[in-house]
Length: 133
Image: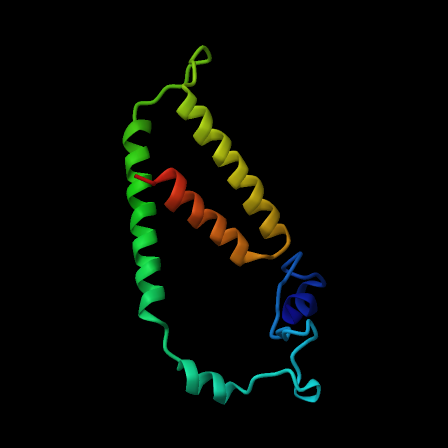
């Protein structure tokens, strides 16, 4: 960012999110002087530095479900030509309403830089509504 400003007299980004700080259970920034921090050595000793296999397995299963859903939808869209006089069935209206709600939730979460909330909304919609069987 500094190089871009130095070379071109403007930033390459409108917004940059950089956060290396965490908040403690008391709501204050975690800091040694506040006494509300957890030393990294304790965290690594208790949990380790490796990615959990359960987390990776969940992501693999979720992405497989998402990929299969996309392929299923693509099969029906291949020769699809929308008609203005088409009547939507109740199930079509239901899934469109849920999709619009998801879009609003994810947009709001991303505008607040709450990536966890956005990803959880997508996972919940995909796993429990769109691909539930």
